[in-house]
Image (cartoon, rainbow, N blue to C red; front, side):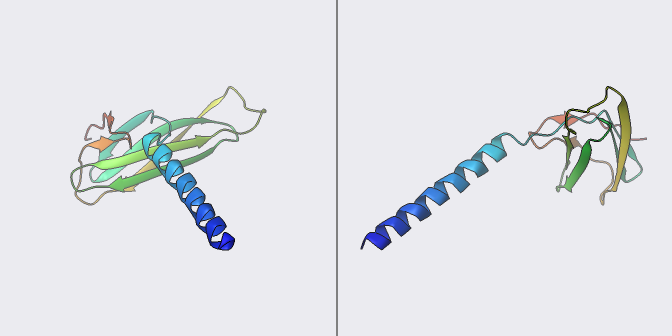
Length: 113
């Protein structure tokens, strides 16, 4: 009987931790703002800056009426220089130009070009 009590308690504790983490991540999607955004035909072009040694990842998820875009910059250790580097990510989007938003719902200004 004690085995079942400990097993159920452990599973409930793990479920609580996983659920709490999921709620936190959905409320705080994180990310950095893009420096620039524009449409080149049906391609979404996103510009960003980062430091030397940083790891940069971009994510784009087309929805039915808008595109969700996110930029993650993981800074290098203590040897971070003050030099700003620039990058650009281009994504072909089916359906052409449409509004672009961050995961938190804030809109990006992405003119068509």
